[in-house]
Image (tube, rainbow, N blue to C red):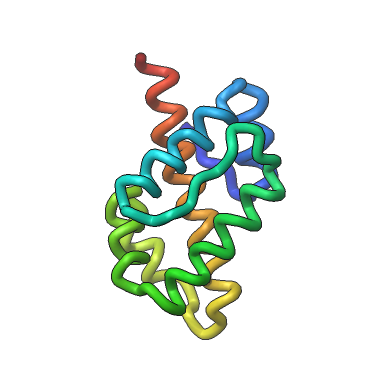
Length: 116
């Protein structure tokens, strides 16, 4: 499996395989497991999804850092990838972390679809 390198590529691939809704459901499931009050509507547009996710990650980094770490653990985002990010600009960091979250969730959805 070759992971998408941009948000747009990820969404295009998810939609082309008719797995976009599964991606949204997986995000909802993992946010619920992390006890974070964010739930995406089934019909959320990709741009709304990106914006809401980015805003929540930013809020978690700024105000609820332990919840942020717990979310990364539950989603299973690579610690090495997080450490490789530049943390000087929190807005940029939260955008990059949001994409890492989406990529990891996409991996889960893709593997479940392929091997179920």
